[in-house]
Amino acid sequence: MSKSTTKKIKKVIKGLNKASKLHAGQAKTLKTIVRKKKWSLATIAIMNVIVVMVVLVVVGNAIATHASTPKPTSQTTHSMASNIMDLLKSIFVSNSKENNNPEKNIKKIIKNLKDKGYKDKTIAGIVANIELETGGTFDYKQNEVGEGTGYGLFQYSNEMKDSYEDYVKDKNKNDSMETQLDFMDEVVKGKWEPGLSNMDKTILKGELFSGKAEPERVAESFNSIFEKGELETDYGNRRDLATKIYGKYFND
Image 1 (cartoon, rainbow, N blue to C red):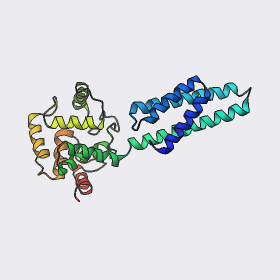
Image 2: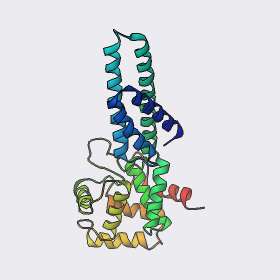
Image 3: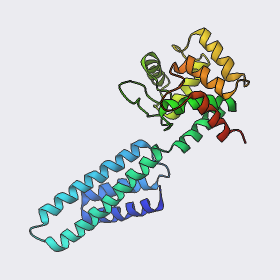
Image 4: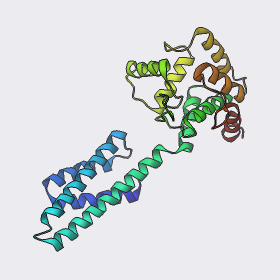
């Protein structure tokens, strides 16, 4: 959480404590959230709900008290509402940047695959497929553009999407970048069924884990066996993307 956002939250908390018992309770919840160094999606959701509730209460109070004591009450209410709206804006802007940061996402993906034991050339080939499938967002929440049902880093759809959803339930995991990469890893290593045919697993394992195949070859094989998509789309060519990624992130 940025210092500016924390400052705005504390300002709102101060105003809430002065307002009423209801607001004081909301202030207490905000204080708890502020003390956390990392925010989960659930925490952010709670934060946003509280802020919206306070905005509605403040606006209602302003309308109700306007006739009897317009000047002092409206000035206090306006100041408090202004602080809340500034806070709300900063939270949504912050969340948007966090969820739509391709460079940050790709680095997390690369680290995850490295930790799983994949070699640099293999990672470049896999990441090239992720780039094309997500349109360069590298966002695990990416939905397929158009009428398709593809979802996530690998745009899981149909049987593979069903298998992924079963995997999430069976492993008691939440949908996330890490979970989607875990699923892919277990499928290509033959640790999760239904996944790939025995022949496809054998071929893909040879391509992915030998460490000998060039990034372009890995990108093409991964697509033909795992993704089963077009090698080239309007976004780009998987082989070319693999070359670019390898040169940028691995070929020092």
